[in-house]
Length: 315
Length: 278
Image 1 (tube, helix red, strand yellow):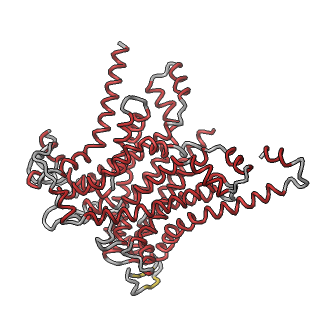
Image 2: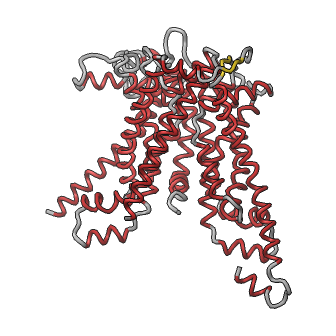
Image 3: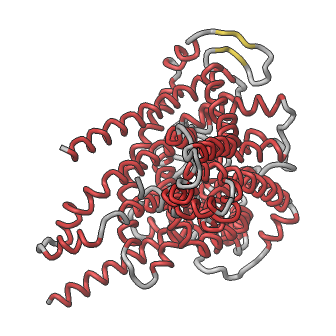
C-alpha cells in the first residue's frame, strides 16, 4: 500500500481513485471465487437440513405417494416410542463415554508424539493408521477380534484367566455397546491426538524452561503451565469429537445392526432404518430433527463453558 | 541416582510409545494375518498367530467370485472426481477468504465450517429426494456431486490456514507487476500453498473413499456401490466369510496406510496449523 502511494501520489491528480476502483474489482473477484463453494455447501447441506425440518412435520413416505401436514404429531409420537428413547439415551451415553476416553487417551498420545525422540515418525504414522481406515472396515475388524466363537480377544482373556468362558461380545446386550465404544475409541483417538497436538505446539518452550529454572517438577509444570494453555484447544477438540460421536452410524450398522434387542440402536441408525427400511420419511425426519436439536444443545453447552472459561481467565 | 531415574523415565516413555504403536497397528496386522489363512484355520478354536500354511485363496476369491474390483472402480471414480472438483473450488474460496477484501469474510468462513458439522442423517433423505427426481440415484454423478459439497468445508479450512501464511507483500508485488487477483493466485500464490493443497486433497479423498451412509442410501446395485457398502454386504447366508472380509479390508486399507506413511509429516503439519492462529 505504501509502495503504491509513494509511487503514484506525486504524479496523479486523483490519488484515491485507482485504489478504490482496484478494491471494487477485488471484492467482485472475491465473490466470484467464493460463489461455487458457497453454492455447493448450501445445496448439499443447508437446503437438505431445512427440508428435513419441514418433512418432520408431515406424514409422508419415501416414495412420495402421500404427504400430509400433521404439525408436531411425529414428535408427540417420539415421546411414546421406547426404541427412540432408548436410542437417545444410548447415543448420549455413547457420546459422553467415548468422548471422555478419547480426550484422555488423545492427550496422552499427543504428549508422546509432541516429544522429539528417535522413531517419532514411525509412532506418528502408526497413530494415523486407525484414522485412515474406513469405519466399515474397522467394524469388520472388531467383529473378527471380538468374535464370540473363536475371536482372539476371547482367546486371550480366557487364557489369562480374566473370564471363565467365551463372551459373545457383540451378541450380548450387556457388552455390545461397550464393544462399539472400544472400536470407536480405537478409530478416532488419533484425530483427537492431532487436534490436541496442535494445542501443545502453542505452548512456548521458553515458558517451560522458565518453569524448570524456577524449580517446578515436570508434574507441576504440566498441571500449572501446559494444561491451562492447552485447555481451550482441548475443549474445542472434545466438542468436535462429541458432535461427531453423537451421529455414530457405521459401527452399529455393520457390527450389530442396532441389536441385540436395540441395545446398540443409535439415533442416526434409527432414523435411517425408519426412513429407508420402513420408508417413513416424515417420522424418520422427526428422529433426525430431534437428534439435530440435541447436537445444537451439546454445542451450546460447550460454547457457554468455553466463554465462561475465557472470561475467568481474563479477570 | 538421578541418572537411574532419568533412565527409568526414558524407559517408561519408550514403553508407552511402543504400546501406542502396538495398539494402533494390532487390529490391522491381525486382519493382514487372517487374510492369508485358510478358512479351516480361521474357524479353529485357538487362533494361529502366524499364517502357516499361508494361502492367497481369499484374494483370489474376492476378485473372481465376488467381483470386488467393481467396487474398487466405483470408489475410485466417485472419490477422485469429487475430490478434484472440490479441491479447485475450495482453493478459489480459501484464497478469496484469506486474501481479498471481502465483506463478511469471517461470517462466511464460520458458516462454511458450521455447516460441515451438520449430521449426515439430517441431509440424507432430502438429497435422496432430489437425486431421485433428477434420475441420479444409481449413478456416479449423483454421489460424486454430493461428495463435492461434503469434502469442501474441511478443504477450505486447511487451505485458508496455508494462504494466511503467505506474506501479503507477495500479493502487492504481483499487483504492482500488473497481475489481477486470478493471475496472482494461479501463478504466484498457489505454488506456495501447494503442500496445503496436497493435504486438503488427501483428506478430502480419504473422507470420500470411506463415506458409508450416503453411498448406502443412493446406490442400490453393485454396479455403482462403493467399497464400504460392498464390504458391509460381505456376508454369506450361514457364516461370516472372515477370510474374504479380511482380504477385502487389506486391499482397501493398504493404499491408505501407504499414503499416511508417506505423507505423515504433511498431514500432521497441515492439520495442526491454522487452528493455532487467531
